Amino acid sequence: MFILRYSKASPYARKVRISADICGLTNLISIKETDTKDPTNRLRDENPLGKIPVLILEDGTALYDSRVIIDYLDVYSGGGKLIPQDTNRKFEALKYQSLADGINDAALIIRHEIAVRRAELRDDEFILYQQEKIDRALSALVKSPPQGPLNIGHIAVACALGYLDLRFEGKWRSTSPSLVDWLADFSTAAPSFKETAL
Image (cartoon, rainbow, N blue to C red; front, top):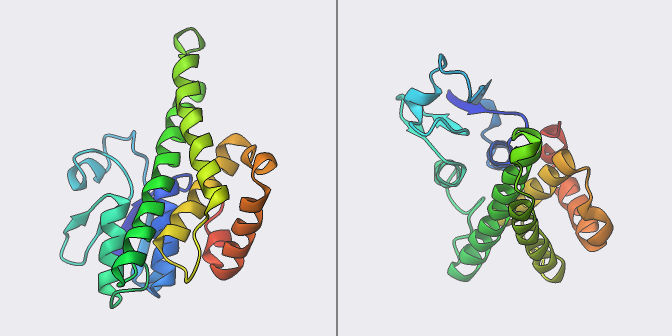
């Protein structure tokens, strides 16, 4: 049995959970919600960065971050379920994953500035700088969303859009209606997307 340390709100952990489901490995993974701010939990021993998700293998080996975990899950399940084996499709899927993770990175920074930093210390220009990254990425996805058989590119993009829904009231939906349709199709194809929603 593997252990997945995660947070319900983390788009990266959600990406791992959906990937595990698509690989047919959900029943082999024990989910452990983890508070990254708690110095008494084992997370910092398992990942010196103190970040989630972390996958603990049966021999105690800790794997992190989400990209490494997903690569492991794909190999463990026989390969080609998450990361295409065809070279062109592989790097297209990984490119989408990178774009989606960039959306998450920028969104998490904005969330921190707004929800954690004291108002007098908030940097509105920095928030705008991060928002512009998200806007450009969404524009690119509107023009060319992930297509073809489900892979890590689809999963990552869906989780990024889900995080924008969670933290920013789905404001992206009004400017990107074609992505709304794309996400609805993904949700039908991958039921674990709804199952992992907050």
